[in-house]
Image: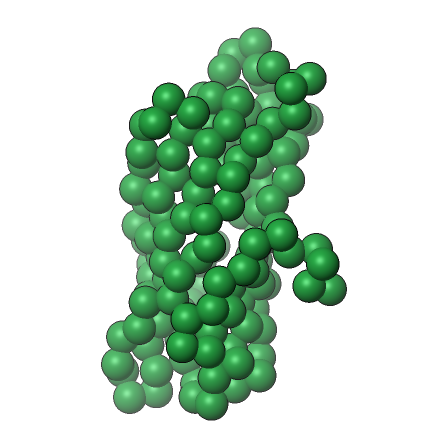
Length: 132
């Protein structure tokens, strides 16, 4: 299963894995619209319960324009992960350029309420040359 995920980062026993795919059927290059879908798996390999509270994304397009996105949880959820548990979700990212990148961090808290930043690995967004 881990072969599906091209990118991974581990912080304090929490591993974030990312698989990303360009979606030509959701893209319109003639209108400067490119779209990617990404699948995230968060694995709690620590010895404590954690809850995902918030997310912070840094999305950069091919022109170097940076968009910071902050929000509560992920796709409307703030999952609680016991030791050994994982949480998966899928989301998408539109850009007005044919390539870019994403990275960021999740804010978790443990059962005592202590906050912890967990890194989301850098991953490129690249449409095939034929999509331009």
